Structure formats: C-alpha cells, structure tokens
Image (tube, rainbow, N blue to C red):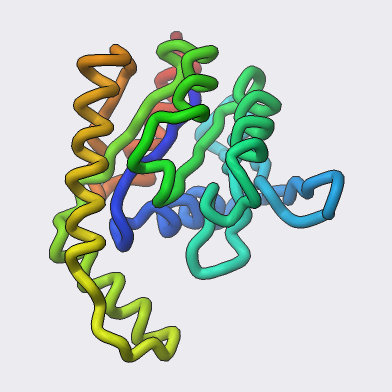
Length: 189
C-alpha cells in the first residue's frame, strides 16, 4: 500500500509523517550521489511489511518538498513502492497530478490518495504559530493558504472523476491510527 497525503500548509502532513516514525527504529536512506537523507525505512510493530517514508525530515517542513526535484520523487517511489509500504507527502504535490501521478498509475489501487480534513482556520493558526516560532513577524497572507484548498479540492475531483483513482478522507484528529489501519488492512488482502 502506498499512501500519498494531501493537505494545505499547517494541515499536519509533516507532523503525521514524524508521528509514524516516532517510537520506531528506522534507518535513514541517503542519496548515493550526495549522501543527503531522502527517505526512512522502518518496521512498525503493527505491520508485517516495512514502511518507507519518502523525503527528508531534517527541517521544520519535510517530505517531498525537501527533495531536489520530481525525478528524485519518482525514483524513490519506483524503488520502494513495489516491495514496501510507502508514505509520502508534500505541499506542492498536494495540488497537482503531474509526473508523480502518472507513475502512481503503475501501482493501481495499491496507491491511495489521502486528503486531510483539517479545518482551514486550524491550518492558518498553525502556520502563524510556526512563523512566530521561527522569528518571522511579517503578517501572513492567508489568501495563499486558503487558495491552496481550492487547488487541492480540484485535484481530488480530477482523481475521482477523470483519472478514476482511489481517494480517502483522513480524519486530522486520528490520522496516524487511520493510516496504520489502512496499511494493516492491505496486508490482509
């Protein structure tokens, strides 16, 4: 099972990825060319297969947005998607289908597009708090964050009605448990 998590800034994507890693022994997968972290592989006690989380989580925001380019995203997805559970997320990838969407077709219904249901006001509050913690006192242009919601919703519509790809809503209050249950259920099929 491969899960791509979608959500706007402050929706909790990176927090969920870090929570999946928390309390588990994992190894860091480095890029062979530059030795930078690009993924994490772990054995979660609830799962039979290993779980690979794509993207480095060494900065405040992690995931695919922290990798160099879409070619790295595709290489990792193709490398680990056929033999492991995979989780990946990123703000930019939350809004479009593109080349990663095309590669996801190789995995059929084993690639699930998951959408966080975090209320926009919660997202805005989290972004503001993150900016203040980083020492950024400039006012937030909330329209950018709100505008991403419309783009994400358009992508979901296209996934369901144009590409006929499986989607699911993830409860932002119970996201980690819900995601682990999706992986666990996929092992029973």
